[in-house]
Image 1 (spheres, helix red, strand yellow):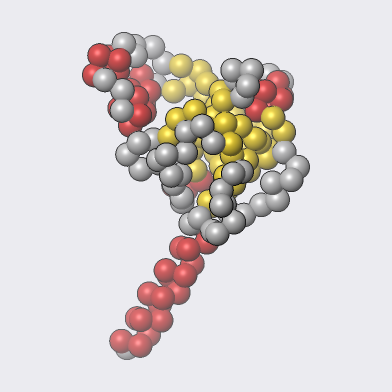
Image 2: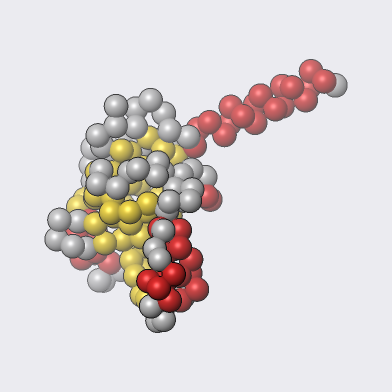
Amino acid sequence: MKYSLSVLAFLFILSCSTTQVSENGFYGETFKPKKYIELNDLTKQMASQDTVQAVVIGKVESVCQKKGCWMNIVSDEGESIFVKFKDYGFFMPLDLAGQEVVMNGKAFKEVTSVEELQHYAEDEGLSKEEIEKITEPKEEYKFMATGVYIANSK
């Protein structure tokens, strides 16, 4: 019985490891990051589609400073998208801001409530005064990533 439980525990840990970072710069599911679109091209597609399945490249503007459970990506042209990770299955390094990433997943538009916006502002480490200034919901582009590749990882 102890042997069976040990084997089950080992298999569980092994199965979870597929959603962690690998030595080649991937978090979550691996994918081929060679064919991707720029973030500003994705937002142009979003103007005429509710959802877009895509591989997208962009620069990390900010990351949740509590767990790394979300990030904001920006383009050189100022377009931005809020990124979460499928099934809360992986997290990003907290010091990822300024680095380029390639993401695989689905983009969509969504209205974010005041409470959720304030929660994200708190996660980002904003002051109480800055958080209290958030009083309106916001329609924004979001991205549910199944995998993220850190372009300049070692």
